[in-house]
Image 1 (cartoon, rainbow, N blue to C red):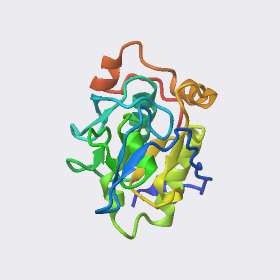
Image 2 (image 1 turned 90 degrees about the horizontal axis):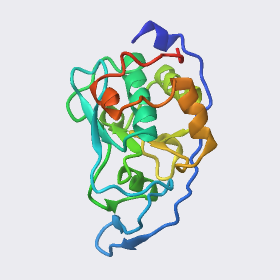
Image 3 (image 1 turned 180 degrees about the vertical axis):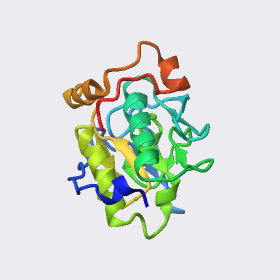
Image 4 (image 1 turned 30 degrees about the vertical axis):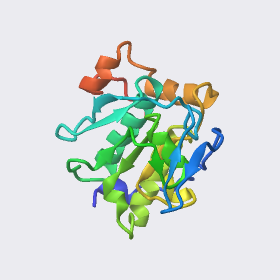
Length: 201
């Protein structure tokens, strides 16, 4: 386990804020249902397709997200997760936008808007060790609490991380200020985040 992870202090995780109204058709055959709304549960527009972005330092792993604010914040989170929690990411360990509207909880609709990611390594029943959880909580706190961890949602989903505010939230502006803003061109995010100013340790 990495030394900086072991030394990390515990921080308070962000709680979810659901702003989209439920819009779905329940299936009688299973626990899944279809999200039929034009926005996801966190208030972002549903996308037919998303943009693929590289996760720096992951050996070429990519994730599909909504460009701009969502990608800027979630790519930063994924990169820090890789550096500070995981030793490596395998193909498919991090997924984002989905086209299928079949979900098992309202918060899964946030995948449809490209404003949530799933980290496959956290899909196991035992989850993370306490020092690792403390690091994840610290990353979320550093970003101003605009990300919610599925560990704190109902039903619990350890692998899930989402933006918890709508597009016009002032909290997003605060997170972007800490990250140095959005790159002038989305292509800079797709290639690498190496040249972005790093103001969060």
